[in-house]
Length: 248
Image (cartoon, rainbow, N blue to C red):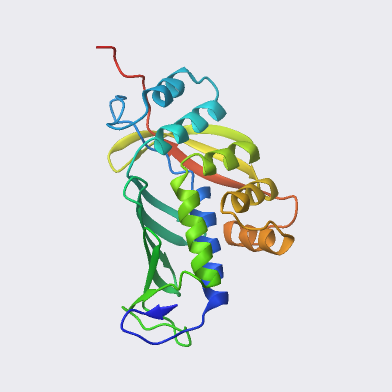
């Protein structure tokens, strides 16, 4: 990985952890959207997915159907918090562009921009001893381990149903806990419990990575600190109410 103005920098281990964290948090966030506050289908949403949400009866079916609505949209915006990190971003599969901003208390902020086959990273408020210069964009060498992992992540993100399949296979339980208003929109609040081992293994496979115990434990630690083999994790999610579009 090197700054755009030149120079070389070897940060394979740090980059590897960042990519795994990005993958784990993005897929596990279960950020749901796709419908307007009055229940109408949002522009660009798949009518079949919206109809499936309307017909769903159980919290599990509602959650999975809402994910399908989100996956049918392009671009998709992300705004979530996980393990103290605030993550915002946008993914446009059609244009092949992904942008993610991650802020971690005490560890500064990281921006990741993927345009086609190019991956760029920038850091701010870099802690002392961190091998980066604040405010400098770094280009990831496509042939480096980090570059290849970034390409795998971009390819997996381009498949909107990869994370859905991983969640569906690992979903242990979903509970509806009531309603809440987010950014002025009334939503239904769900709490999902995932089998971490099953979810992480499926996520690594979707990324094209070899599934080995060390990687599974690393991703589990990023998603749920202190997690051990066979453990589960809960994720709170909110979904706007959806309805099938009216016939014209």
